[in-house]
Amino acid sequence: MFNFQNFKHKYIRLWLSSMRLGDWLVLVLALSFVVYLFTALWTNSHATKVQIKLGDKIYGAYSLNQQRDVHVHGSIGETIIRIADGRARFLRSPCHHQYCVHQGWLSRAGQAAICLPNQISLELLSEHKPYDSLSY
Image 1: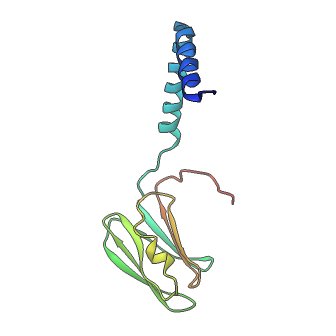
Image 2 (image 1 turned 90 degrees about the vertical axis):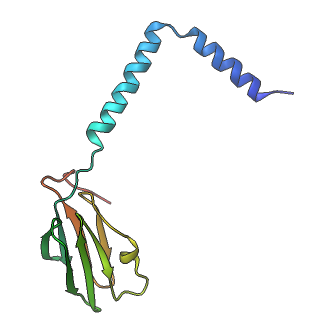
């Protein structure tokens, strides 16, 4: 009967024993390069303000450094957006499922939350956008 575990261990030992100094150097450099790219390109900066849209128009932009509740009257009722401690969230909304409220606190640039039934969205912005455009 074929024992896969035994075969796997023998194969890994054979592969490791056949690697030379140059192979290890290439492996370490490649892993270092991947870690560098991950840290350089996958960064999320902290947001400085929140932009609220009602339908396709900008309702307002507010600094995240202040604490306030923003009352927005959408198509089905009033939505309350809370801004506090450098974060923003939907606090209350008249929509049925409350997905926007359950989204929770947003704190990073580029994050967004949407209440589709009430046609209200909020997006966190920073000094510079982390991307040029997005396509879905």
